[in-house]
Length: 442
Image 1 (cartoon, one colour):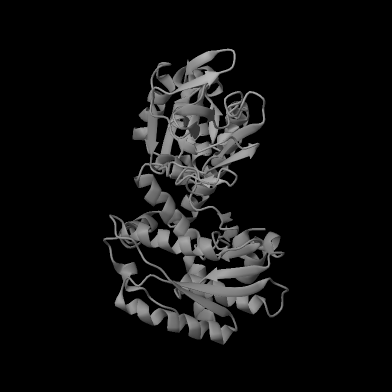
Image 2: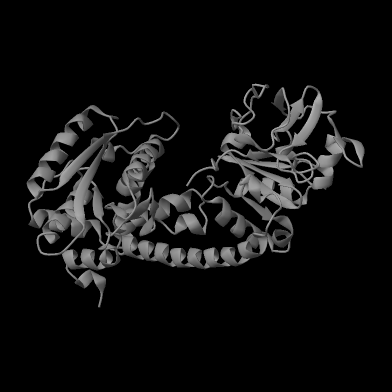
């Protein structure tokens, strides 16, 4: 049966059927037409259907004077429907795109309030999907971007759902008129300087006058592209399974992939698998900035290539690529002396070191490599630390952060490297827990 022939409340229930075991359905309630209809639909369905607990959240951006009255309006609507409302005020960062900054602030707030087994419902509809497709097409987006807004995705500890993506704005307007709903008209929605408003008011009326079904067919194209992206994601998982090999430095807790299986793929498959792997970690580069990957991939063995991305860096070492962000890119500092070696020592910006076993006599210090260090090894004599690190294949990005245990000027141990991390008799060992997984965006 054609979904458009099913009445709106039933269609909404069908779209949410697999999420009725959630503990909470929280509606993102701006007070505008779309979210007002969604809230009204759910509040009335809850009278006859067994639904999760309903609540609403209003994000107050504070970007215009008119917005100061909106929380009061939203509270009045929610009171009338018997739905609890939470108002969250956010700070919008200044930048080139006010639209994007407001969206980032809004979704950061949504992320914070969405807990396990909870669902945040937003009211984007089919016309919004068509606008998203055209907007991203004009920006040169690839298949992932042209897939439009997904019907569902992880958010915080729960999920975000868009249950009205198969509903037109005209249908929402008809429902609102039938039930005599009142809503906020945001003055900024008429401002043509914003790209989406320009498309909505200047471009789409012309398209629809020539192709009346333009919104429907463009939303259908987004659905086709979403299916194509799903196939690309499946291919990426196949390719990742070959590159996610075990490394002897997995204890670093740094995401990494083996390079050789990636080099065997076509260029297009390399970009696909890397985009899939990097997507949870960083904002992805546009097509003009993938030369950084080629430089990293094709570098000679003695080079130290780095591909800098928006939220971190890719390094190459030991036949692998490594994703570094957060603490790994910030300088670490040492206090020097370790006054209580029986207790763990926190290294500012660089994790924690611990001595286990029979603690060696002091005074002891933790230092970082500066160059020229020598270690006395039983049966091997004095050996340069640089050569020992080369023998172990320690990645270059680790070497300057690897904790070294000194007694005076004598290098006693190198954390975590078997044979170098304690005394010859095995009576004590130096263990380093690197920085936590501050590894980029989710």
